[in-house]
Amino acid sequence: MNSYRKITIYLLLLVSLSILAGAKGIVASTSWVGAIAKAAGANDVTILAPIELRHPPEYDYKPQDVVKALEADYIVWAGYEPFVKKLTAAYPEIESKLIAVRTTNIPDNLVNMTRMLATKFGTEKNQQVWEAIFLSEMTSYKERATKAQVNTQKVAVSVHQAELITWLGYDVVKTFGSNQLTPADIAQINQIQPDLIIDNYNSLDGKLLAEHSQYVILFNFPTKDYPELLDVLSENIKRLGL
Image 1 (cartoon, rainbow, N blue to C red):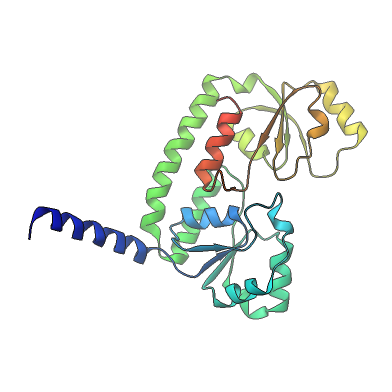
Image 2: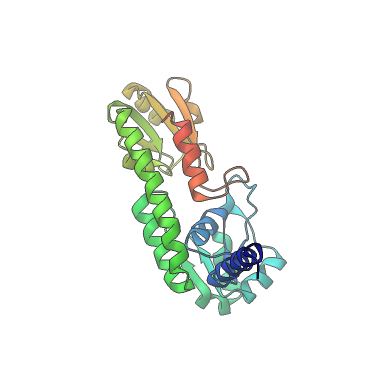
């Protein structure tokens, strides 16, 4: 057997083992939990809410989603998607397949969530490879934030981005987005005079604050342009100028 053929067979074997190692029959409610499942080592993840939606949890399930849910081995969700609750109420037999993950893009959480899923999927080795790359990148982001002295920047931030921004070290003086901003809220934030307003693409609660401070929009849910967790985080870091 010549060396070229040996290499070809070896590469095919590696691909086959990788496919076998990935969990099958994984359905995810949204692109965010789908990306977490993929990071945990699942190779074949079906996402119910279309990735183009501005706010995926507001999706309403379709008849074809029922079939996907009934045939799935696991259904990964974040616990707050109304359409999954409606689907489970209509088809109680899928409840035993549900796995809830916490959705916030900070290292401790994503490591814990992917490890938990990998244990259930049997994809621990795949998850370990992802985790090493992920933690290396996150360490780099944190070092950039420290070098940029973000702790000296006063920020008002969407509650949906607050944990990431706090982890990076910014001086968070106000969060918004739990409820609709009132004129009094806007006046209070303007009085604080934050250096930066950090909004969330999937809600855009802070648009009314953009007039008086530098305004940045960050992502939580993966999109077509940023399909994986590290794609989302890399784009957010770029938008923050780090």
